[in-house]
Image (cartoon, rainbow, N blue to C red; front, side, top):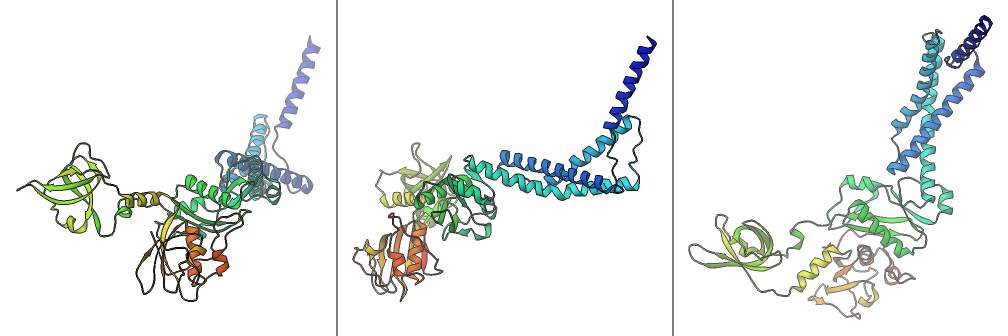
Length: 432
């Protein structure tokens, strides 16, 4: 029994001794250069592994690049955690680690420095790996550059939006906020490689509109996904853009009919001191006893703020012009008035030569000619009213200002799509 107990005591002591050795701190200093180098390389690799794993996970979950400070903190923390854990293990085993000796302090500081230095490399490698892996798996949106190998073997065409300072504001449209431009800047969107050039452009416009909430997108893009021009605009809001010249919208205290809705033609009647018709306009909105009416400016001046009015709904009348304006407001097409300059590529060409809708032409010394025939020849000083997509208007504008060859303006692309402009004129253009 005594021998057995003694034997058991030796075994327990041996196990305790081995445990204390395993839990002992890193007793490596620069007095032993080879061991110190191996330890520092190990710490660096550990920092790279942790930072790279964090970057890959962050990209997978948030579809964005992990902040640099986070990976730096993780890379340093994992080394510091290991050093602290081994030191506490030695203390628990009854040893007295030399934590405050200058050699140990210096080695620990260098170890943390190595971890801080190598963590950004792990962040970069992990993020690039995540972008490439998600691209090959068919992700529809990425925020990072793809490697050449992935671009070559991928089943998609990648389109990278330009930096914020290169995103243009579309003429006559409300500008997009700088925050919105920064949000979409340098984003990489993925599309099927089977799309033609025009289909790729249409898909890109739809994606930018839906993903970033912009109203209008004007883009020139090649078939391989290179963006040559990119402009955005906010969709016009409020009543102002829908009011005709010489009209105004006025809010009055009134008693509208129960079934009156926006768009109804109404008469505005004064009830005191005697019943009198003041104006006729279009009802735009009703909120309780307040009604907003669009009417001529001269009629708006006759309304008095202190008075209350009664509205009478008129029979419905066809208003094709307002319906057209309403439809055009929500479409990608817009209107523009462009002046043809002397010596430009368009001077001498005809309406039938340009792939865009010409609504009217006002010669320099003549009256307006609505819907001219295809044989009408543009002359210097002609003011041309157009309806079309912003990129087609830019092309016509460049030709009217002499900034491109006539062949570039008249020729269509091989697949029948509208050609694109190579430049933008600075003057002689009005858009709505």
